[in-house]
Amino acid sequence: MLNITKTVEGEKTVFSVEGRLDTNTAPEMEKAIRETIPEAREIVIDFEKLDYISSAGLRVLLSAHKAMSSGGTLRISNVNQPITEIFEVTGFSEILNIG
Amino acid sequence: MNDKREGAVRAALSGRIDSGNASVIEAELRGQLEGHAGEPVILDAEKLEYISSAGLRVILRLVKEHRDLRVVGVSSEIYEIFEMTGFTEMMTVEKAYRTVSVDGCEVIGEGFNGKVYRIDRDNVVKTYKNADALAEIRHEREVAKLALILGVPTAISYDVVRVGDSYGSVFELLNARSFTKILIEEPERMDFCVREYVKMLKKIHSIAVPEGKLPKIKEKVLCAVRRVKDTLPEGLGDKLLGMVEAIPDSDRMIHGDCHTKNIVLAGDEVLLIDMDTLSVGDPIFEFLYMYNAYVGYSEYDPGIVLDFQGYDAKTAREFWHRTLAAYFETDDEDAINAVEEKIRCLAYPYLLDWSARHPGHDKEKEKATADLWRSRLVELLGRVDDLDLGAVAAAGRDPDELNIEAATDNLDEVINFVNEKLETCDCSPKAQMQMDLAVEEIFVNIANYAYAPDKGRATVRVEVSDEPVTVTITFIDRGVPYDPLKKDDPDVTLPAGEREVGGLGIFLTKQIMDDLSYEYRDGQNILTLKKKL
Image (spheres, helix red, strand yellow):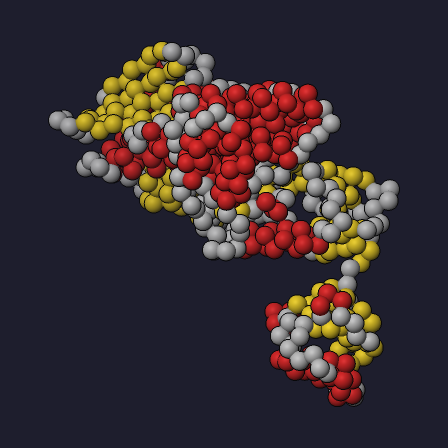
């Protein structure tokens, strides 16, 4: 289960995600981001309530990051310790804007 | 105006009955019923145009004196008045039947008991061969209503009509396709059909039916066994009877004729239809009828299933076999075979009884068919000693193992299974998340690639050992041989632009777990993951 709450503040869009970002929920996340990319200059994904991420979730973050790098920024905030470790192991902590 | 047909006094209601004439009508009725106190009464409402509450009160007073009072021939408008005022709950109110002609109508279905015609754009009528089908129709409506209330998606007829000399029940036309049709037109969707079919079977088999609402199927089968047992060699008949008697009574719902013509897809909803055989009993009785529909009837002449279902005997057998595997959650052929043998011990007596009671014209073929059934039954009775499917299913299933269709839809079930096993050891939330991650990556890989473009099953085994506490998770599939450990690790130092989207799953699993090993043995990919806690 993944709950996605979207808040728009001008050109900044914040997605607060809660639950699990896995094979079955990643498509929802991808769709939500894809719909926002054309209108947002800054996308923040708030991981405070995210418990779990798998490679399917990582793939969504990577493609969103690539799509945003041309004209905006993507930032991941409030990442918990276990997910931080996954970002580190996979080199994502070097790629993504985290914090 | 009264006669004593059907052992009841008849009287007619006609025109308008309201406060203006209710007392006059009451006096007339009482005159006609005089001398029949307490006897059953039929009030014929065919010519009744309107009835107000004053008129209803007249009927109410008559019901108090004649407990068995029925109002018949009621028009739809008047029926509504009876229904709204609660009279239909207090007494029998029968609607007048509309007459429908099916001349020239398209036949959209044909079963053992009658045909289904499309009568206009939105409606179909199901007709019955039996001229006195009214009781049958009522029964089917009652059980369909009961099933719906108990949570089974089904279609209920909304009207009963006269068709020629018999009756028919009218259904809203569903934009539905039977699973039979799907299997013929889109054989590649067999997986879907098996999955939905098993889901439906498990659903109805989990529903407890209130006592007395449905017949007990065990009694019906016992009757057949008693009729057949003396045609079996000495001792075997009694052994069979004893085994059937030992099947525990159950209040669980059984469809009783659950083959692919009776399960339909309407939009994305799966419905069960033809509810007239609904009963209660142990699921083995359901399988008896299923086995016969797919295999039993056509064991001597495989053409029979093709005639009845429109798909060939090979398809029928495959569908049946996969249904058993999915229902009993195993792909262990020995376990499936053991289950099937028990089912066949019930299926053959039923077929032998059926054949003895439905003689046809081809005596020679009938005898050959019955001889084949009987010889197979005799052979089975030599080695099968009980009809307890639960025991076989449980023995074939290891509590540390989950056998499941490898589909991403089942991911949550797999994760839940693993987490339940992990509850027994003191596992930190972080270790649990890592374990979930490894399980997801491997299971999703199997789901997406092992059997593509087909579907297949996977086994997940979880073991926890002590000192140091170690979790071992094993994945087994029968798909294409593939060693995921041979896959090159992605370069995790590359900048975003050069990183490929994908290839991370196995890499992550390797990082998280302490040990991974792969082997291909007996046609199975076996991947074992270990982690110390």
